[in-house]
Image 1: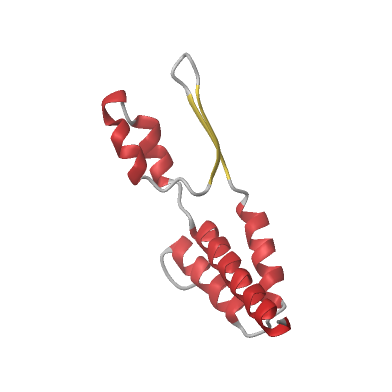
Image 2: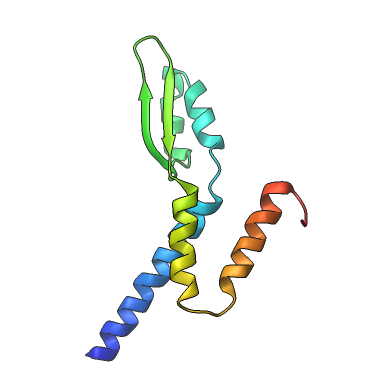
Length: 106
């Protein structure tokens, strides 16, 4: 039973790492789209990726506010989880994020 529990824990850990990776690379493009959707386009909301959104507000005067996941905290959690494995995967992830943000190699 200890082995089964360990495998389950490893699977949960892998799922957590995968989710954190997605959040670390998440872009807020769909939130901008949401801000400009009209009432007639409400069906399009289901197609938007809002996974990195913590809070949304549309005020009575029409202004739109959004709070996002703190990517620095997400990366810190990822670092902690991945450093425990010490398999070089963390460096690959960070290299990929750097290349993705500036469009090329740094």
